[in-house]
Amino acid sequence: MRWSTFRTADGEERVGVWHGDRLHPAPGVRRLVDLLGDDGTRLREAGQAALASGESVDPAAVDLLPPVPEPPSVRDFMAFEEHVVTASAAIGHTVDPLWYEQPVFYFTNPAAARGARADVAIPPGSAALDYELEVAVVIGREGSDLTPEEAEEHIAGFVLFCDWSARDLQAAEMRIGLGPAKGKDSANGFGPWLVTRDEVAPRAARRGYDLTLTASVNGVPYSAGNVADLYWSFGQMIAYASRGTRVRPGDVVGSGTVGTGCVLELSRVHGTERYPYLREGDRVRLEGELLGAIEARVVAGTPPRPLSQPSPTSPASPASPASPRTDPDGSRA
Image (cartoon, rainbow, N blue to C red; front, side):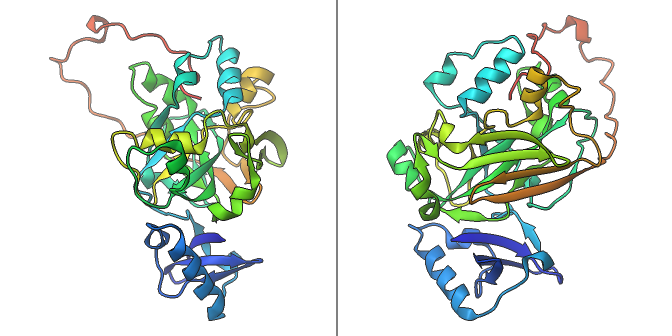
């Protein structure tokens, strides 16, 4: 089944299941997360009730929100070797051996979730906006200290994901040793629907799934990759995320960027003239087999508001310990 959360013209938020090109609201359901928490039975029964009700809406007449509009948490991993190797080599770095020993992730902003047709504003103060072509899973039930095999059973479904990134803000902040913070704080794009695990399972291949992902800017093809190329499986990622804590229904776990799946990588290899960072007015289309498409227009952002000046008693910058140098753009791909 394919599940969407949508807002009607009168502002009501509802949840529905797709049949063909029509969206069928689930009776009495306002949040997709309320259908999670078990082995998928609630989703299946609610979908059957939605299709049996006879009610349907035209998807073009509603606002498609993220399937889980306010996820409890969003973890984004770096799990595609091609992207890690190519992006590192392009900036003169080698891959840290730790990447091959354990999956790595950062937490991003649940409040920045954006729907599949939402505009994306350039973050305040940035001149290097980038897309990142990814897939994510939504956790279906709670678990802690899971094995990879157990973790696979905790997946409710899959969704197209875009980690919009301000590369210049990211590089500046990560010189301090934290981040990416404001470099990835303004927008997280989600595809139009969540595809349940049983629909994706037949595509299992190697450590991932045989699902092609593509990206274009202003109609020009940019990126292409396949979810089967994951180095770390979603079971491994979720198991690591659950270590010493818990994953909860509605949590989002992103794969990280597929190989060639961002302007940072493409521009470093092929040049910035051919692949410049995104500008106001650009139209970005990200698409995944079974997962639908994100179609975003880049719009102007607001200028950064000035911060108060440091106190005269604050230590002067030159007296502070030197921060380790980090290559602009290359701190996190």
